[in-house]
Image (cartoon, rainbow, N blue to C red; front, side, top):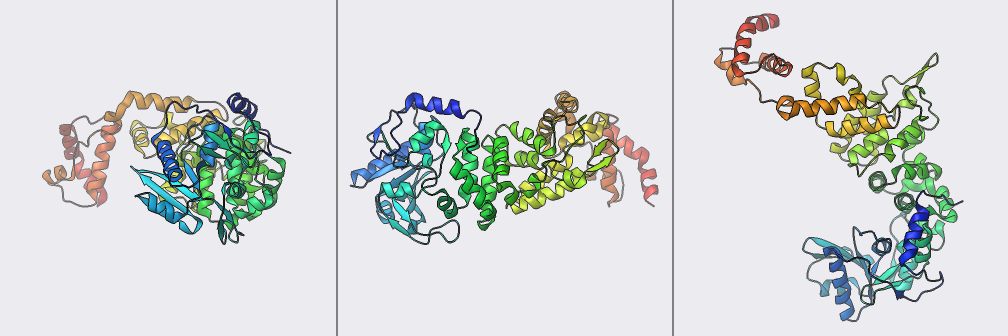
Length: 480
């Protein structure tokens, strides 16, 4: 059965207000009014490319996701052009081009830092690697539409006549809020298994439903998702987490069996019960999805931190009478987060930050009891802003107790950068000037000075010099 998304009715109603839906069998273009008073530089470039190709006798249209987004009154991130021109023709007509897949008829046309992908109309041969066809046959717009993934991505737009050209029923599905594979869903998804994740992402982000036959094909093919490169899977997971609708996306990933295939550690959170005193919302899976729902255009690292912050709870769960505990789940979770990020082919910078967030996500709870110097050093840690945000949405997704978070925010505002990271009072040169022999002891002395400075016991350079003079013999005698 189709999976209903909150907001899909609203989206469909909004669409039908300004788009006349042609019968699903119609292949003729119909007028489409422009709803954007402002046109971006990238769209102007794409329109100019179409005009140039048309002026040299070729058929050319805007194609794919940009048409979908324009119909939804959303500004497209990218514009693609589909044309009867071959790659060699495109390279001849435009001064700056990059052949990114010339054997498939794909060329990037560059202009002032922007790029538009221009692809020749084609039909694809069989797929053997779950990504690329063995061969292609250059064809026409109709055949090109039939090879695409979903009906809402299979439309063309003629910016010259301002007409939408729809051979696959994309307008009808867009108006209905439906993600539907073009033609045989099993064949379409098997051609490029990443399309399964893309269907989930589009349904979640747009608030659409997935057509029953398409969803059934995803469930059947889900175990084969690992046949494609993990870099592609990782990139799609990040888009799911950061583009909006992540909570619903992970429900769909779980129901489609894709979650078990790509992130079994997250699927394992289902049914892991927590103490209702601290987690009245339910099990760890429900709690995690509530966090995802509170993400607002997050960074990749914050999104992964939210997803993985409690990933080790199934392994660390213990029952002490009526009390459920998860001792060590922060530390174990950080280790698991590194492994998962590496599986998804994230960068070292990313998985180091994610591990920091997972390991420290409960550390704010002890912030009110920290000594001043400890608290200030805590605030200086790289990633503290994301850690604070993770702690905030973690609390809002469980007990709702924001007191530790609010304490930290108050302290940050009251202290300011000048007290959190004050200039050092002394350096190694100062210690040498005092006649102290250079060596490993210098670092300990300077750290002790900074500790006293952060605690408010040393305020000036003179105070620090006097303090070192007073304690120099004790410090060196302790070492000996």
